[in-house]
Image 1 (cartoon, rainbow, N blue to C red):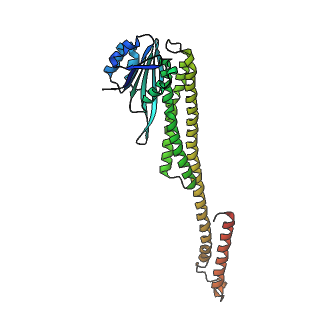
Image 2 (image 1 turned 60 degrees about the horizontal axis):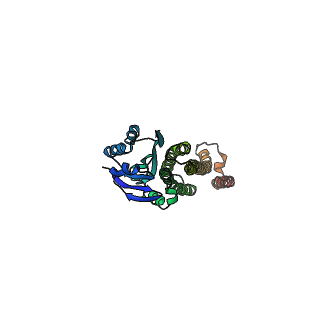
Image 3 (image 1 turned 120 degrees about the vertical axis):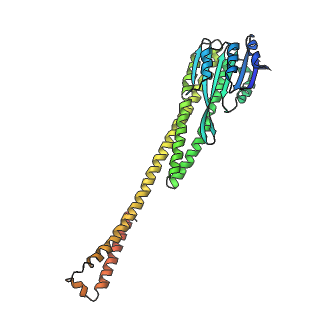
Length: 323
């Protein structure tokens, strides 16, 4: 069973009274009045009830009972059906809550299919601006869409902060598998945010061009404002995706550089150790005709030669930055 979050009738920019779902059509038919109904997870019976009252198109109801893959706007005569998505974080995972908006002459109905940010704030903000609320259904529609887009900003900022933290970590220490997985997950979240935000540009543009009885031409700049906000969000999300990708690339390059340094050190010490090994190998071949073996200071001479060679190699590698 769905929940009626709020249902009220408005006239001349002011709230007249709260109503039940069954009273909506009667109030909407009164000149100068419109109803604003907010539902949470409505069932088929409630949607069919609203369909009978407000003459909602059967295809709009059919769409409202289905899950969609991205935002969209459809027109049915002089009525609108809009699908929007609000991002939320649930146990660290990015999720999108689908909201269906029915709008027409005398009514605005929102059906939220999940626990996203409450639309009560939108209602309070509209009621606090009676001069704009006096425009009616089109201003409410603008306020809802603007609120949906606003939800993307804090989510983007939170992801930005996490990417910055990982970027600082990558610069100070080696990039481990967990960091790579985290960066990849954040980048995927950014791309999903862009995927659900991008269609809102087209929706806002269509609302500016529609000639519906309940959409005043003076409200078109407000829908353009929504479009501008969406494009800014898209730019920010594109930048975030690039930062995440570049952080991964920088981390890989730094790790390769660190490994190269270690490999050079190993190679340098291997060369230094190979020198005494080679000299000792010569005198371990058990040849009889080796005149220096009978020299009284031969042992010390060989040790000195080995020491000088090793120190010389060490100094050479030190100058070249290998040690």
